[in-house]
Length: 257
Image (tube, rainbow, N blue to C red; front, side, top):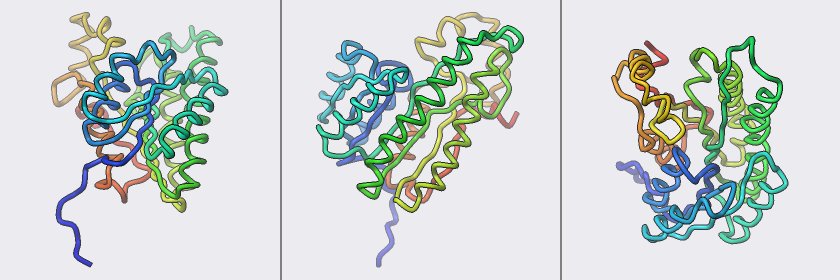
């Protein structure tokens, strides 16, 4: 058999489901996957959030479906996954993008914030992944990509619970990669540093905080959403077919400085 000499980064004929797709990293991933040739399911809390995104994906020439997926409502999440699978007939790639992190010093963490963070970041992610993985097991193939954070590998003051949840996601990634490899499913995570999004702009607009962040990034810049989306498209593509259980740090070198 003649070996391929050019890696295949195309997502043509793939169906990609992105949770938390209405803005920020999720939105960038949805558009990047469509740009690479995929049809896209955008998981959002309310369909109204996705109108502009749906139009952009359609303009790229690909099919798109918006489904309601609030990770605090697992029954609704499962219904959204069922709707997406019925519409497209398959789900080839799952991008778990939803995550929250109320900040507070460890001694001041409130129980309700602890529970909310764990319920969304861990419980919600796990059971979303489980529901999609059952479909992938049946089709004997799939790619699962968890959007984690550098917080799973480095210490961020005031974010102990968020850091804990992302470290757990990184290890869950390895566990699921091992369990589901026999079914042709790869499971990987992508861990960004601070990225310019609507959520981070207020903090990064503070010159002192901005400089503090830059002082930890050897490459000397804050990340853009496309930086994360590039790693995601790679992991979703045939070029990454032998990669599973990995965590790609998109952190400009923060974790090694």
